[in-house]
Length: 438
Image (cartoon, helix red, strand yellow):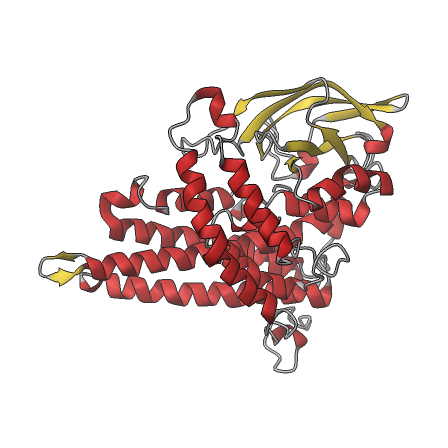
């Protein structure tokens, strides 16, 4: 029995192998780099200084002067046309391809506030893309418009306390139709962004049709954060950090009532919506992660050539030269993989490109973690302190090995596809355990 043709391989004429940024996007790319250097980085230093040493409930509000600094940078970004360019081929954004945006996202990943200053922050990017694609005119007017204007923030309520949410079929938060209202009950945690005083809307994954086929039971509903019954229990910490005021919140939905019209796309279409949301968001995370790896490598080398021990610069001690070499090789390898995944989404569509997306999501956070860890080691005790960004960067990247699905799920999807390809069977789309998170 002959095996089917491989799904992956190198074809010199394949459009997927043309990974060049388009000529039309190059001026924007250069503009973004200048804006980060000239506007965002100086602002970020002042912004962080204002927010230091805040305790208790005041941590969940912006310190005096912080929002003024942030809004001034956002206004400048709007003035310069650096706004909402994350939406691929959309009238509301720059109309960039996923490949073009992937290059830009790598630059955004080098400066933590860069994405927010240009209205390209998660989880808002995924939420705006969902509303752009499937929202009704009324939903777009009420929620998408202020999100696109940078006037409010949003969150995506998926992960549950008592169930393994890496398999979205396990979602148990219920929504029951009562007249013209959905009544929602359940408990979720690690809802990123829900702590922000500017967060006004939650796209919430619920189970609406328990008797339907497994992949038709879930729906997405818009829940305003100030709806009675939405109870924020508190912040979940990440490596002992609460990430205030953004936060990752533990939320109880206690008989929360929202209008029937708050349903997105239709009852039982939650998995369908996820196909719109997940691919682009994962690519954005991966390219921002590569930007973080670049920054970590820069810090590693700078530290290595600025300090001496045992009569040599640190960079030349032990295996540090090889560590630096391997970091550069890994970054370039990751970059090419993610660019190809982005191109696959442009050429094949999100659904058909999912294997590439799963591959880079399994690969990138793990390898970036290793590079940041090596940069920490080069810095010694300083590397785990508050005096370098490395500890925060490591925590963020380690979290990404869980967010958007744990490594194991991505490897399962890729490995299963490879095995079934050799068996001659076709992967059943309905069996894909979609993983939903920021």
